Length: 235
Ligand SMILES: O=C[C@H](O)[C@H](O)[C@H](O)COP(=O)(O)O
Image (cartoon, rainbow, N blue to C red; front, side, top):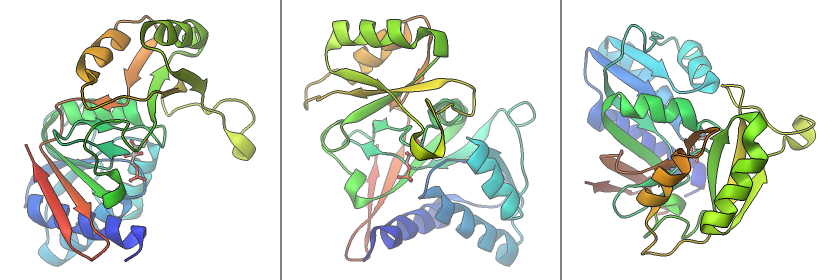
């Protein structure tokens, strides 16, 4: 089974297990959640569900609108029943690295407002510990502070921080949905690395807007497997 199919079966199962009528639903960002929104839209039509969807990015907002779902906002719907989102890596305790697609800030705000955060991913994201397979931690920063932040994190913890560039699609650095830059922290952790402590220290550095470390936030993860099965992990 292809990776795309693995993403699809994970997202479909998560939506089928967790979505019922009259919920406020957080909609994550990335390639896997696209299938989750497809499934939501199918079920809204076939079961006449009443759902309000809260986006975690410009992409998520477009997905909600393109699929004919009801778009909500945190001003009106600050309590979210369930948020469904992808991840770049997810460890045994369901701590995650997110932000590979540059969308971590709004994702973390929505996740923090959700009673339950569900992760959907293909099997390549299922790890023992963070940075086992995914070797970088995205950090969203205020543009004027990117060099001081880079220097500070490198001197505190080592590794190497690189400003994420737009490549051929954009000259210069990519700019997030919130007008910030992304520093990708290339860092090799181990099963004993205290990512919770590291995250807290990084969050204290002036100019850091948020990190792609989602510690203790997810309740359940669905991983689509090559054989067509879906592995479920729950805290
Ligand atoms: O910035 C992107 C988000 O954090 C995504 O949820 C994450 O990168 C996973 O994306 P995908 O579902 O494409 O693997």
